[in-house]
Length: 82
Image 1 (tube, rainbow, N blue to C red):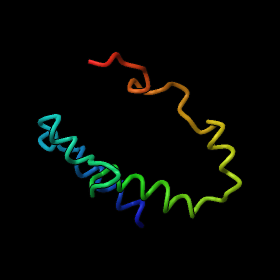
Image 2: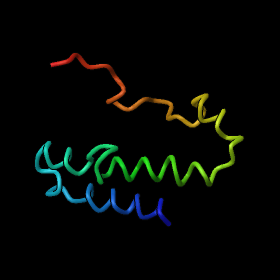
Image 3: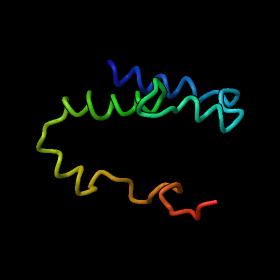
């Protein structure tokens, strides 16, 4: 249920363009590991909750990248610092 709630919160924010009218809006929403933003919620759902639900035998498969998307998202590409 907590993973469902995490996904619902992400959907609630990102489905409305007026929630993201500026870069600051998105940065505030995402927050960091130290704030109560979406990043902390995602980390909790993935690491603490899903980590306890999945068998440890899957860890080597995750580490090998077998579940990774075949084409990396655009933000994986290195960018020159401004």
